Length: 305
Length: 305
Image (cartoon, rainbow over all chains, first blue to last red; front, side, top):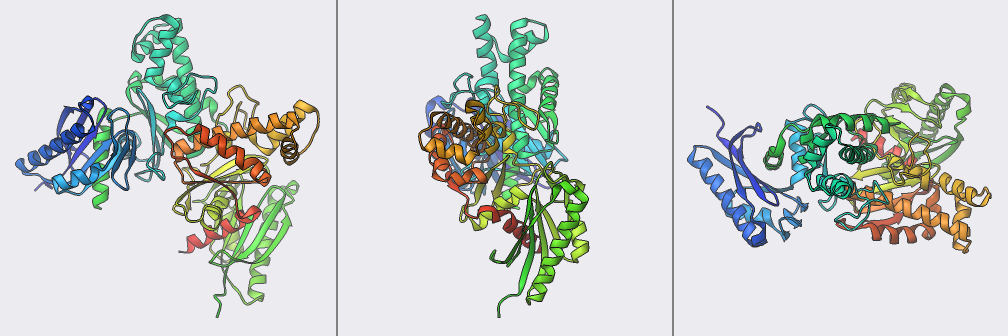
């Protein structure tokens, strides 16, 4: 007989929630997506999260499965230990005790984690970092953030704010970042920064993916933006490697969909920056946008053990 | 009756070795210093290390103490797990299996650690970081390196090369670093860089400590160099805080002897750079140049437990 155990897993983003029932081996038996509806305010978002989680637990029981835990991932600053969504710009959370709210509603042990940190956990254990003990997962999308995973655990830091590689200084004379400081990696090399820089040069408001395509097609302005982006990312990854000394760097997030157009030149640029360092393996993420949901499930399973 | 247990501890530097017999509570019962004599070549240095360690164990026994372990700290790249001094420019080691050599000679369980990493271990557990769980120790001397200590253990990385904060990019258009790359923190803000920059501006070859004194006395060129140094250090620490999210940053090494002349402006500059971050407490090291030796002893004691 198959083990009926499943975890209720939710990855709450600024626009949508990815939700699943996940078995202890990391396989998914059911998935759902829902709009976050962040514009409705944090109370309404919390209400939706609890409703969706309850619905998933009910669906599991109806299918003869046994939900044993709930794992929720949210963006921003997350205090895993206290189970509190401390701060999130795009969902609107401020000190929301989401773990305890969900645990009370579902009557299930619940864990709360940071979306990129648990995404890194999933990539390190089930995805592109599988088989290596020291992994840095870097998600490059609208923003840039990282998850440092050692021996299958994501490093959280003292206040749940570790891994903010988007906010390391790479270009002191560069554009101002959303955080308020000039020259952050995120201000130079996120998907949003790529699109903005290209629009500045050409007046043409296209996506970062389109800039990658045009660069590959030999369009000079796109080529220049792409080269600058790759150089800044390589500087950021070299700093990460100097501090963390990992075996594997996994690149995820929207910009990673450029595939070899990003990874091939980035690998060359990172290699050029390695001096005393041991050069890490640089690979693309394997789990796509399901990493956060799987990672939320892993965190919940870890807490049971 | 007092516990007779002691650890034989050696901190091997480029010019001298600090050696001690250390009790399990971290108190020191005997200290010795010896010249490293690196110019004699690595084999001779290894010979001296083994002789000094054997002498310390003999001294302990003669005094009615019981040496139970040996801890050795060395600079460069150190593979703690294999007990190998992988590479060190100033001592001349290349793949020296120092742990096993010492264990065989002394017939004692021996551990090998990185000098700054174990120095951070000692500061975190016995010194300025005492009582906090997440500590970043930054040693600023001829070079700059860091030790990230979480719950009393120093993070080593996959290849024993974690914490190289001296080699993170802070000034892309800055001077070339000894590692070969331009703009590393170490090339801009180490004690050596301070002296070099001041000499460039004034033609006056004085120490970094003297530059600090002259800056405090209102000498314009010294003031400029000191402000640039503090700004670069604050950029480096802000990057460290974004990635590690610690509670306490401990500043050690030769430059830390400038005391409030370094720490006061550095605290202000770091504060200016904190946006989403939780600001760490910034303090001077408490154990001086004995941190490495104490840390080597702690590492050896940890391995016994």
